[in-house]
Structures are given as structure tokens and as C-alpha cells.
Picture (cartoon, rainbow, N blue to C red):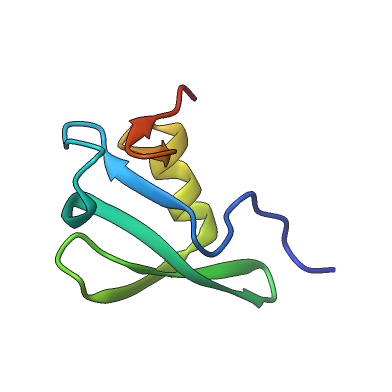
Amino acid sequence: MAPQTFLAPGQRYVDIAADPWRVDQQLTILQIAELPGDSVVTYRSFNGDEESTSASRFEAAISGGLIVPVIGTGRVAAC
């Protein structure tokens, strides 16, 4: 069975201290690759580079409050 994650391509996140409406400050999830034991998230980072990390590590950054979801036209969602 594939690992479960709430992450999906197209979702945007921003550092808690950044302006959420600024696209150049956002992380954008590009794809989720399912591997045994954990999924790998590939995302476009703040500087435009594509980076990858485990889904559990990305989710830990969200639940730890380091990054927050961006909704609509730059509003930050409450987690």
C-alpha cells in the first residue's frame, strides 16, 4: 500500500515570516513520487530551483509551523 499524504501537485506554501502574496516567496509542489516507506515531494523553491525531500519531512515543516499553506490570492490558511 502506498504511503498516505495530504500533499498534492499545485499546492503552494510560504515561509511563516514571508509575504504570502509574493509568488517569488512561495514553494509550489510539482509532483509526488510514491516509494516504499515514504513518498518523495518535488517542489519549486523560493529561488526557482526544483528540489526534492521526503513527504514526511515536508509535512513536518508544515505541522511545525515553519511553512504555511497559501490559499486564494495570497492569503495564509490557519493550520
